[in-house]
Image 1 (cartoon, rainbow, N blue to C red):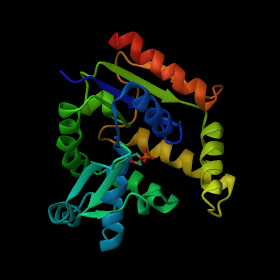
Image 2: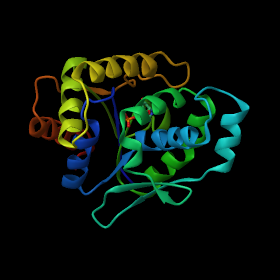
Image 3: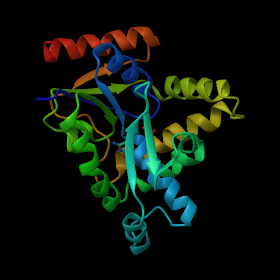
Length: 224
Ligand code: DC
């Protein structure tokens, strides 16, 4: 039986970088489900499809293929119709589009099997918004990772500046607040702590401390 860790929480809580490191230390596969929503958002942007429930979105979902694969370093690659779009989905525009399109119920249904199949075949740390509540409600451990909006915006700002992007802290903070609102207020699978989850707040923790905390929670609950 494979082991599944559900890791949910708001945008910018550090889920992906923390989960990547923890997965490496535990020899698990790290699955970033946000990348899947971002990829569908990119497909919609390319085809000029509005991110709201419509026949056009249904048609788009019937026309595209989205796949997850891993390179030889164990990093996740996301493919849109066979094209590696892992880099293209990381802009602030792609973030906002992903937040909007992820509220469309048929988009969520479309990605459900893909996510569940990953957890059937591997030991996974799966990061998202509804992993503990919808995708893997029977996960061995469900963790809700959070931090204050300001701390999250500051971290994302630093990350984007380091990549050489010309961004303003206030814009990032507004994006974080808007995305939190979208993610927690949508009707389908809103972001909320799963029943029985372990809450981890990283506002006062640095990266190494956050990784240690997550690993200790996983070890404690899975008896690894
Ligand atoms: O984790 P991220 O920032 O890459 O996610 C992009 C968007 O996708 C985010 O606004 C919420 C949405 N998302 C979701 O609704 N469910 C998930 N399991 C993962 C992400």
